[in-house]
Image (cartoon, rainbow, N blue to C red; front, side, top):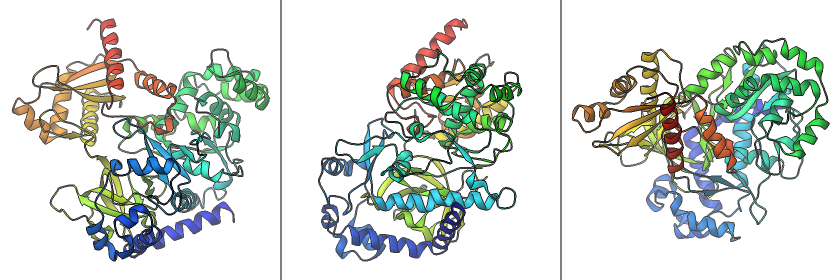
Length: 554
């Protein structure tokens, strides 16, 4: 079966399930309970005797990761039948909101949900979008920005970030076909995690007929494009000579492999040199790759600085915004190409429960009971051993596909600033920064917020790349007041001091990301933070801002 047929079949299945989402949800719960009734967890909670969703809700408590930590450690050590009857085929590693590593089991069933509804579903949506203008789109070359390092636990079970799990699983016997990607398998599936941006960029630039760029998060695509722009002359010299510049931090292994893979190509170097990219990066993507058609990456309202960047690098290139998901489950698929912040919850992924975010309803609701425009905290039961798991994500229902909710991610529960019980969340901070940029007449800079309790009352600190903005503290204060009534009330009552803007050089956050990468943490796992979330990050930003302010005499 070809990719077009696979994509059409996946899309048809998704739409059929969405049309009967409530019935599919009941079916999935019955399947989960029946399959895992004889496990240790299933026996403890009487899975065999549970009849229906309400019975399940009354017998099984809402859980968090700490409820599973000991069980997962035993599973990793080799015990069977603890949480699931089927042994996990992968353990997703995530740092979570506390930067403490967690291992989340993934069974083959959930891998197949990912494959059938997301991987193949995206094929269907892309094919449908380009059916008339580019009917062979699925056979075109792809620049895959991510990587899928071959990592495993001592037992041999695969592990790593969840975003790499599907490709590792598909290549578990070495048979996954990467002929549609611009880079060879050795680059996409390295034996060790390391920064191979230069290598992947070299292969992408060598390919004249790229049709798409794929990533998990949009910031990875923007970073790759930034790398190309910032190293343009060096890259062209290396393409022309078939060599690797001595300044590039790359092991001898990769240097030798690149020389063998990519011989001198003065013709391609001359083509690229004629684009004048040193002077103007506008529409850079299509100038380099005229046949580029679409991008895949998570972007939208949560990533305004990267949406701004991509509007310059590829102003008219449509994007499929991939998924809303987490290590605990890939739960949704974007509602088509060019539809940011719209994600269809996949009924076959497991049982979804929804706690109203306004706190007026104690009993969790189900798919058929939701209202458009309302916000809910998500509780999820999957096929991998998490039962009534509190995701701590707040979602807003923006529409429906049949009975299946179409949602947008709003913010993480408890991911907020709080000096005096004002509880300003990431979404409100983003709105305040949007207003701030409008007032200052600047494009969206990279930024991050923190709280400062070194004075009384406490205040907000905004670390922003840039400098020279007059009355920045006052303007930011006014924007925060407009974005959050809670903040405004606390300011009026004198419970919060005036916020303070700390300026930093352009590229500071990129330096911090490189610092994260140097520790061995995969960049696919790193999500740009709007709120400082670790002592290390706080100390790094404060030190950089201090040096910058000293150099500018402030």
